[in-house]
Length: 150
Image 1 (cartoon, one colour):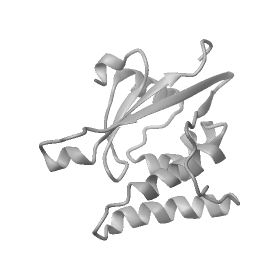
Image 2 (image 1 turned 30 degrees about the vertical axis):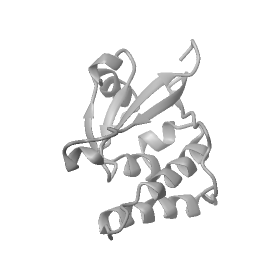
Image 3 (image 1 turned 90 degrees about the vertical axis):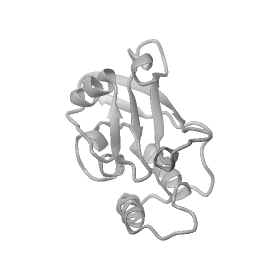
Image 4 (image 1 turned 45 degrees about the horizontal axis):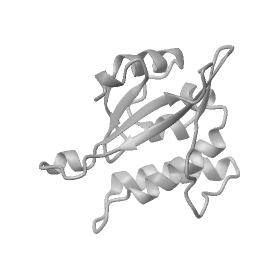
């Protein structure tokens, strides 16, 4: 699915938001951002090139926090997931932001690449009935341009 999504960026992340795989357009897009994230929570919430490139960071960060909360493992404690939530919560607090009580229907990250603005939206999907438990936590995130200019 990643390869078929070209020419648009696509990536696979696991339950801890570690980047598992990228398609070539995603590699090029991240190279233009001067970012090579191993973990999307770190890339979105810690100061760095990716966070700096997201023009609507408050909107994206609060939505990402809600998603991270929603994806917390049910029925078991996961110290790594708790640490990611803490990283995200700290970044929101430092920016004077609060996580919304309800999810937004659509969040559209807008990136600044030099003099170019790239407006996107993403589709996040997972396998509905995986036969292997390791596939259960994988998420496929496909980015699409939001307008013809992007």
